[in-house]
Image 1 (cartoon, rainbow, N blue to C red):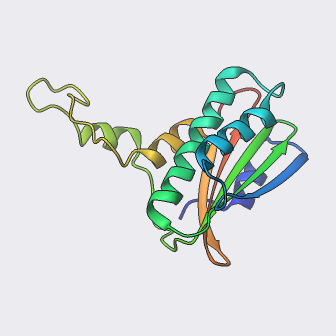
Image 2 (cartoon, rainbow, N blue to C red):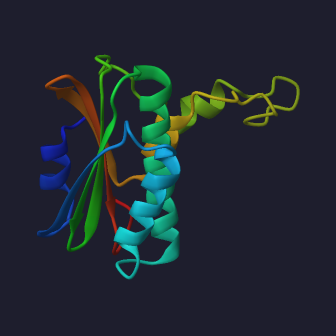
Image 3 (cartoon, helix red, strand yellow):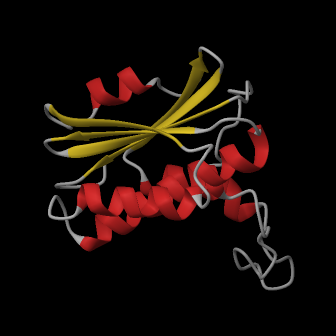
Length: 162
């Protein structure tokens, strides 16, 4: 089972909690755009643009999965630490078994049989969200919540990605 949010916070060098924000996104007209702008504002001046872009990709993938697959209310939690940020998305879904493919098996499963090259133009057009989160986050996890599940990704903002 993937680590819990508490595991991520304990295991990664995030430092002390600086800011905690919670948002119910169900009533937002454009929840993805709104969430991306909120993350951009939160991280402005905290890290470089590459890490901000990583955080934007992570929040986009987690929210897209929640909106597309779980239905119902979706909320976003942003916790800013001295050296990192966690993004938590709560939805009504109850499947906590979804795990991203590792890099080797993901690329090998789409290997072009003629050329032997990874990808070979046969990569799936969807279903890569958690793979991307796994690749760009310092860590991520999923756990049951009171009314569904929460998927949390942590991103170190200084030093190496993990």
